[in-house]
View 1 (cartoon, rainbow, N blue to C red):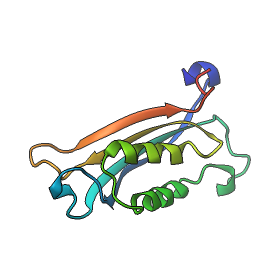
View 2 (tube, helix red, strand yellow):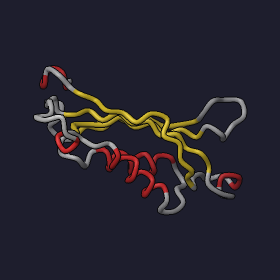
View 3 (cartoon, rainbow, N blue to C red):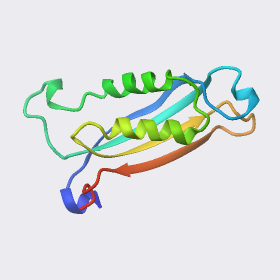
View 4 (cartoon, one colour):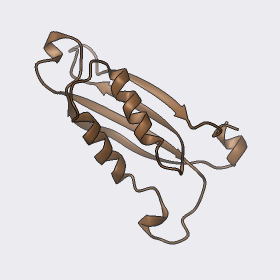
Length: 128
């Protein structure tokens, strides 16, 4: 695991990030964008900032911007496609060891809170 290799792992997260996305395979889903909730946890190298400056840490504003850009690129048939795209964005910064991403469609069925998908991916070599 990460802790056996690093001794400490830091994480930053983005919770219940709500956006409108054109997604789904059903006719009722293709009529327009629907609400998607995105939850992300990024596992970072255990390095403390050298100074109390944003340039010393991972600025998670990039994550929101990049996800909004990805979500606006067109129609996604599958949550898996959207989730894989988000995972790739999450793993781009050098300080990120791995990421957990969950996407949820909260408005699809009236009898459940959401339908969704979750995946965890680590960079090669991050686990030891």
